[in-house]
Image (cartoon, rainbow, N blue to C red; front, side, top):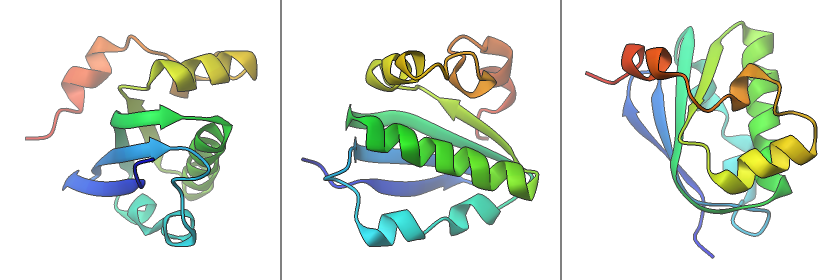
Length: 112
């Protein structure tokens, strides 16, 4: 098990590192949503995620809920296959957040 951490790479761009699982999340991680208040657009790169489970998907859905409420555009990059499969099983794969190939978005949102 690798503890979940969220690292700021650039303004509005964050990297999730570690496991996105129930056992890897602690109360501090679950309560620290302040990174979602950093602008009108947030990019969360999940390329550093090792393992993922339904708790990880639930956390992503919570991030979506919060950013929608704050009218912040949220984009996920490098979503692990495990999470894409869970999203598909849950009927969430039709949400734009879980669309994998968006090359124009990737080019647009590269940190400087």
